[in-house]
Image 1 (cartoon, helix red, strand yellow):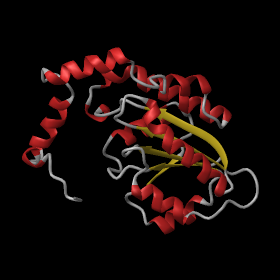
Image 2 (cartoon, rainbow, N blue to C red; image 1 turned 120 degrees about the horizontal axis):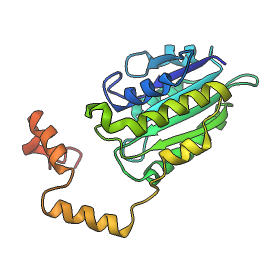
Image 3 (cartoon, rainbow, N blue to C red; image 1 turned 180 degrees about the horizontal axis):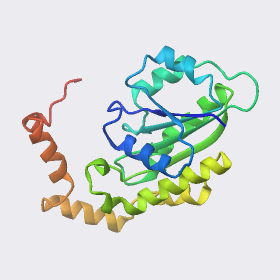
Image 4 (cartoon, rainbow, N blue to C red; image 1 turned 30 degrees about the vertical axis):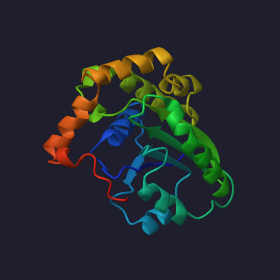
Length: 214
């Protein structure tokens, strides 16, 4: 099984998507090739993909949608000819609830069928904001799951259902958790501290309420 992994993040090798790919590959004895949608001409990459049996797209979720560079790449892909071609996806997002990614999953399932690939499934992992900036000790459980996911994929050519279920286990937030987060926000202890810090570091804090498309 000749596999290529497409990093679909606009940040390329800098960000959470690269962390997911790195940990996935750590579970494999034979490393798969990784290509970067943000760094490669999409027409050339689409043609190159045809030489592989399996394509795995790893990407962030951008407000219920895939990054534009992934969409443009997929639109350049030709339908697979013959049998034995398969395609799978791993979507990570800052949303805690995996339900936020299910709208995209429906599209990914449909586009895989349209391109005549066998659909391997979509792995969804929410609550991933900032993992690339966290110490490894804080991500031990996630990294172990991704290692195991990669090992299983290398053995069987599929995603392990139990691991996929565990990664996407937070389907939605309970009323209690919503109330807690709302209360933390009111007293200034929400993740706004993290995001406001990033805005200030990039000298964009004063423009945080800008509406450029209005």
